[in-house]
Image (cartoon, rainbow, N blue to C red):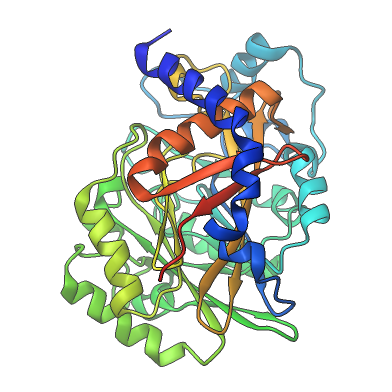
Length: 408
């Protein structure tokens, strides 16, 4: 066991031993504990949802299994890896099976809107981009996404164009036919930059603006143009870019709207957040009217910040992938994830509270994490959150609750 992993494990034990003290202090350190507004908007957020490749092969309508990777040329090999790790699969899986316990948790916590980062093309068309890793799911398996009923599938990432422009156009058409909203990609730059508007009856609206950044592999040729399909790519993280986003937000935002900036950025592994990312997140809140930043790309959870009572998730971690059984980077526990449920005050966009449901991927299914696995996640969040002034405690239902010092 690495020194860092030992440290996180010990820190987790100390954190959870102090959970009762943290819960008692919640009303002083968590504005949501004393502001239970019926008008609050509850969101469900998560990181990467990758239903292509091995998962596609496990569903009722698998596509062509041929891959163009350096070591694996058949997507069914990822099923074999999962079986070697955790036992045989009963195939085909039903469309809802891959979500497993997550469906019960969504029903139980009843978020007003559901936002996922869909990290795969949904297509049987196109040619593979020569990048080494290409994800796609057959359009006939779209029911697996409908089973979780996301209001918005974020597409501004480095895999939605894995099968070129035809694959992207097929993805957009398939999502539209299925009634699944999306943001961050389009048939031209205007469409790619447009927010997904999610009305919440009796409360207001959630506006999802989605962006991809080159730090996550979103290169310039992915960017949508005036007449070119592509994604909504950030040219840089400058204040000029922030101000351009601010102009776009002002064109759409009404009083009572909650604005989410969903950004695919950063590398797959590692906890540190670049200073430029943190400065950009703060500037979006200070200058652009953004209320919440939903960051993803990292295959594991990263630290959480609450800046001036506005939530910043720098890296959500994976929720659903076919990485089960793949060797390497085990110390990061990419099989462990979180379902994030923040409650936002639509009057000012401030975070009231946030519950997180720990998960573990096993047999291509999302499962509730064990107590030990939850403790490990708590250790990571507390270790990485220290520099942001955040911490977590575990409640009686096994969920993690976020704590922070509210703005003055």
